[in-house]
Length: 522
Image: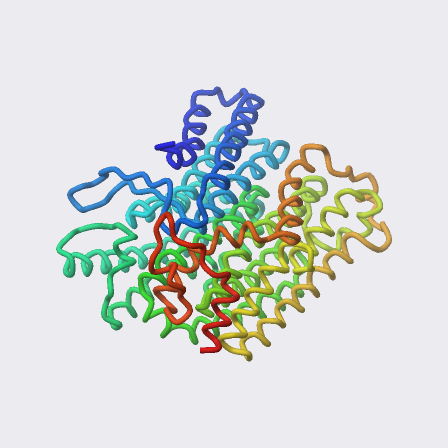
């Protein structure tokens, strides 16, 4: 298909336009249209898994057209293994978020679903764009619908949380834009061509001092989005006050925008500055891993506990990435997918009991497994997934990250491993307090178990958690060439000949573990 990516990209936006034509009083039609659009969006993205060629080192499904020729901006889309997996995660989570909202939203239903669909297009566009200005456009587009989702349909402190989220991200974005412009003008000074082509920037060699400043600008933009310590303070508030679907999308997809930015732009475009900043970022990551876990352990609000767990998990993702070897990078990307699956499910779990009881206080619950056995079983599986229990998806990501970090620094790996132990502590403590014990609160005695619709929101997440835990090879295989492209720029000592050759008929690269081990021996 010539315009396959565009079809995936603009289908949610087309659905939003259709919703604008439906009378706001017809809420049932609005819900059905949105659910159908989200389901079709997920279904039409599935062939991407089969049509993507893992052995081809080039960007695939490329679409290119003039957009603003006077400044060299293009409508330029394309995907590699990294963006393919994140696009599939986005379309799946988008469908789940829409389906989970069926009974949760009762006011201004039309506007709510329009914002959800516009947000979906913004996220997909950011993962597909290979033109830096186009990427920045979609990056900014995401801000507006999420701001309104939190500010209108959120809980008690929704306006404060929405404004805080907007300002933090906007400040980071403006500074990132300055870095993009610096890169744009430097490329012109070298090549004589004005362009925002990301693939061209991947080939530019800049002086280290300029790299340093541009890396810092990108770092502030992406670190806020991850969010890294100490830029994380907007996240617990935004998660706590967002509606359930907003929290699910924020945790599962939007936080990955920051890590995707580092992988797509900072590491391959600014390799020397990246290597200089490794100790600084590693310290922030280690602090974030331990701090996020300890604060999560002390939470009394169910949703804030899950929010602080994201701070710890995303810090682990960043640490694996900045080990700058194939094992750590692969583990970092896999763990991004794992975090989207497990933490997205955990926010759905909180949302279900919140719809029934309208409280997130952990002390209000206890013994729920007696009245909600199916719910308790799903919660248990996703708890073990978040902890990283072998045979579930979280294990392989944490294993690869710790192995990659161990290659770089045994001390870093030892401290980071404490985050795994603390993660098990706060998640098991949460499960014990809510699911086990006596059913003492009479308000919990008649709580309904999962409905078929609610179980349907968990079904794809449960399947993926088991699939990635038992057989992660198909996911790892799709990341080989993407990881090698990054490694060839930022850590050439680990690169294989495939990374330099590329092309459609290039041989499949060695597994990242083997490459890292060979480089370590050298």
